Length: 299
Length: 299
Image (tube, rainbow over all chains, first blue to last red):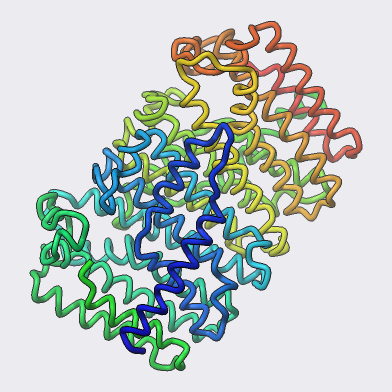
């Protein structure tokens, strides 16, 4: 798949995802108005939508139609949005801006931001388990995909990685710790996105397993790239200052391995992601192109 | 059912619930140790276990066996535990003690407490959707019960009620607002507990609907009693100071209706809960006894 084709592929899906998120969380005119506004503020603030796109691509890789998993994919984006709101809180990373806008707690206050995160996380599972939103999916497959997402988003995965991230600040982290943290914090939910899409579309065990491995390596490469961009990136393109990880003494790949070795690891990890797809047919070409594309992204 | 029999009934179930919670969240010796310790601290700190008991009783009311829904019931308790951790945070109610022990953030710090709450909420859904933990439950029923819990715990229910509670502090609340808040904050998850148990045990539509109505009224009565205990209770029995709602200008029934009218409402609400069970057989006797018991509780 050529880069130009990939751009069109991503754009079509990003647009459908944004439209679907809007339908899944419409504005309300009730007593809970504030929390829904706070949820919408962060959920609809844009972003790459990489996790839901990977969920759609996982379904397509096993011959499924992306429409059938659109609502589920959007639920995964709700989980991502909740994690950003809570990460930005004063007790956590204490960030004032996200994507050039005030963070959720800066806009709505800390209590509303905590509850908006809780609301998005809970609503994600409400969407995933509502059968009428996934009419073509077998109930057992829906359970399995939801279970995978919950497991990878929880203390074994994303939440666990975040805790380790917090604890590692201002310490001299080991490579083992950085590897665990990145696998848990970023790769876990990305893996669940790709594999979840394949499960929902009725993929066989071998395909789900291959896509799961791809997702894990892709997620790792994605995080190494994030670490590198914080050192090497252009703050205008990134929409945030560079060097903030170093300033906060965050546990990152460059901090542990240096820049060159981190770049080598990134390339090797992308190769491992591509190798995982070696038995998959042309339906996985978008996933192959996404892996190459992420390696070269500047934001 | 006599009061003495009810005590034995509750004690047997509470014990099984506590044992099961321990197996569902064992201590871990990994990098995520801290968050699991913080999750266990609040989850295993005791408590009435009223929501999981009601889930078991919902299953038993439609002829099911409580063992078959024990893991699901414990997942609901995880959601309750998460909500207490987040409610106690400095940005929310800013409480230092809960059940006579330091609150989660006092013990583990604010970041760990936020993440422990997130971890418990996510793990609840991981447990609910893991089929091997509910081997006798039909996948479609498991989805439906999980969906109900997610819906009632989210911005339409518990989270929404909490937001309204925050916003109502220091204002002159209307009865409508207090009614919505209590229905959402407390009754929603209690309703989902009873109805969820009945769904998992294969209860028919009429029974699930009756139990759902029972749960809603019971949850409301439960919250009115909580409000009344804050005014009339004995601080030693409660394990917390009385009068704290008034001090914080919380929106409560006594604040809006006065004590006598609140007591009248409580009795009427318990009657409505009992009426909802009028077509149910003796399998619902424990639920009837629980409603009577709650009306007389002092803590």
